[in-house]
Length: 172
Image 1 (cartoon, rainbow, N blue to C red):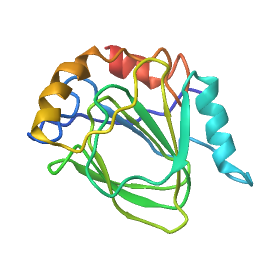
Image 2: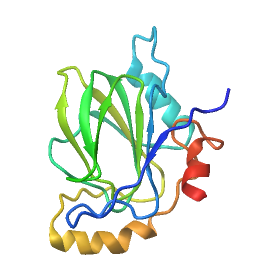
Image 3: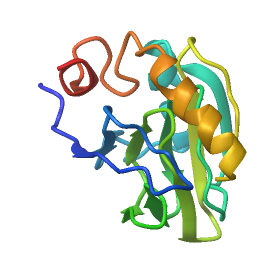
Image 4: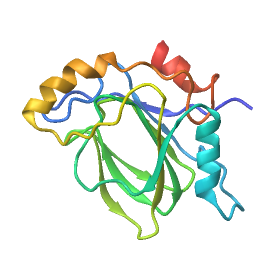
């Protein structure tokens, strides 16, 4: 069965959040089949790991605007719901539900606007790149503009592997 086509969103630099000038955010609705599993966190972690994504965490999404200029990030929703703004103040709000995944290219702003109390997000990163959190200051913005284009492309789509949509949408 072919991978579903994700929603691809490209955001402009808003002066505070640089976003990624060439790689779109990919939103996969119902990417993970969680029906009937007592441990959706483990199911998502297993899929991400099988495609080479690691350095995982379980948590929510920070309630302030932030971005990662030195690494790409995937977030899978294991439990609960959230409304998240991606792309900074002029970005787009998306409602996330269990089974959804969002792939954020380096530099893409994200901020949780509201969440259910049971929200559990699984985050992961490709082996290339290093985690750094930025909140939109002017000095870090200039450094981010230089580092974002240097972040290597992942070898695999975190949800669908080597033949997933990432290859087509991020590599042209």
